[in-house]
Length: 369
Image 1 (cartoon, rainbow, N blue to C red):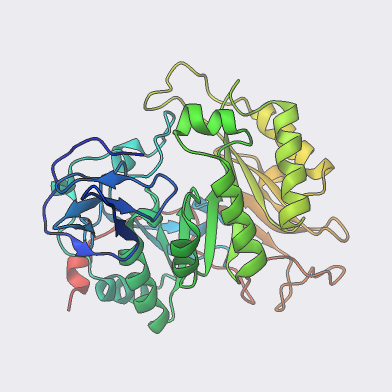
Image 2 (spheres, helix red, strand yellow; image 1 turned 90 degrees about the horizontal axis):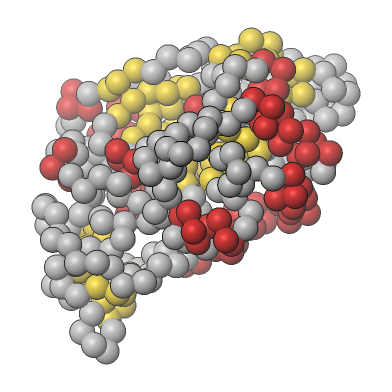
């Protein structure tokens, strides 16, 4: 896709690798399936990868829209270090164009001047460690578009004993995908729907590259993966679509991959739709369970029974969970059901974290070297 002309935002961009020159003098970005073809001075649809001096550069390296400590359940991840705090941040821009975007003020931002001026990889790793965060989340906008920055942060975090979590739509090409996920420990992938028609009409992207990312992650990496689908009334919530989606997940990814069905609220350019009824979330969970998904959750609502984790061996409630707050914990030190010994899928520590539902803004300037 050719990008529309836009002025390259300051500052001077950071070098990147995934691009090539075209015969007509333009350069093509090869990070995602959009393949934006850019003349010098143009930015891609994501806005942050741009043509400068006959190369593609990243214009948001070292700059963030802000930092906040979240409960890891907010990503959402229910099977990766439950109860622990995670240092979350994003930059600006996105390589999809979802009309329902719930983070549009960040992902659609063209105001790079509002980004924080100093957020080096080493500073982020140092802050996460000092604040007791077990992991860092690349979130709010899709980290694949700030590929180089995310990888440098992940490397610094790994040296500090801090894990990395990608919150992503999975819209990325094979070569950068392999490099990117080599440095990630967990991912929540937004499977926005299960029809090509929805993806093209609503996101201006395609479904197949996302499915390929999911299969790659589950089959070829050690990255812990969970899926999220925001159910939009009348758009992606039909019984047939939910059946086909959940059956595909079990067949191609496995019954152990958690699925989160979350409630939509009107936002951005999709304000004509109502909020998702709680009953729709319940129906989606039932369809998932019927098709063999072991861990299916409802989200953006209070529902202790349907947000908790249950043993697929004996049915015991393993982790009580209401929104982002944990209650019961019935896993042994090896992550097995305390009642019957069946292992639970996920990455667990001997005891849960105690962060709760708090959100805490962080000023990184005090952690700079």
